[in-house]
Length: 386
Image 1 (cartoon, rainbow, N blue to C red):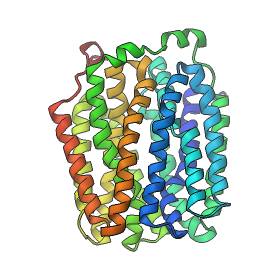
Image 2: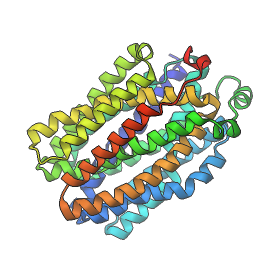
Image 3: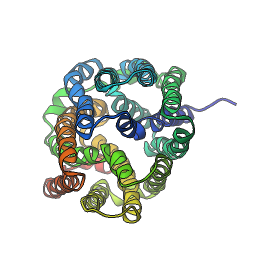
């Protein structure tokens, strides 16, 4: 039976994020198990956004059309998989920092390019983007539940090698994808218009909101693994908890696919922002696991809403031809913010524990929330009706 292109895109997300879930949720715990301090962990977490800042203009210049995006996606995921496998064969802060730097240099824009590439496909085929993106979350539910126990049985290194293998397999999926319709025609129709993007005031409003709010959320979530295990949760149960809140994300995304359009992107982002603030307020107090675990399920609901609303909001503000460029520009400023924040969070956590840095994260997310309420980007009427 001939497979549809939509199914291939679903597999594209499932395989990539299955590998992701075998590595990134456990990376911070792995480093700590190897003797890395919270302050050094903050430095490692700062490397990726700092490197992204430096290489983002290069990738922004390179990624001009769909053909280029396709080629880059084929290469990046192989490099990332190889570096993850290499990490299992080294030790020491300097070597870990080097591998993280290489991954950041060659692979940090992958998800943004993947999302822009897929959003273009969905727009051309009149398919709901979230109906494909949900398979990334499904992969995370399955893989993170397995990975926590697998680490207990076989160790981090074996699980990370499996992760790297799935990253490399992702490249084969990209080769399998067919060119979009009439490739030359699509390439012309989806050529970016950088001048109109840079004159777009609503884009700048969204850029500020996303950088502050989601940047602070990312900083807080980067340290979640070491925070929750420091409270006494073992890796096996951490994997199950991760699977649980991503399962909530899947359910939320499913609801968004059927009900999201009628609710409107602005209302959805307001709800997501509220849930982000609530979660980090709880993390800012010395509360037991019996409270923190159910509160963490809010992470799945808020991210499920954001995944749906974010891409829709961006497409309506900047138009589909500028989606990938807009995401890369957002990533640049987002990276500056998270680089500073990750380093600062690590220093504060090392000196004072996790309550103070999480209180600061909650306050920063709240500030971004207020900014969004006061300066919400306006969606052009012609795109709002689509």
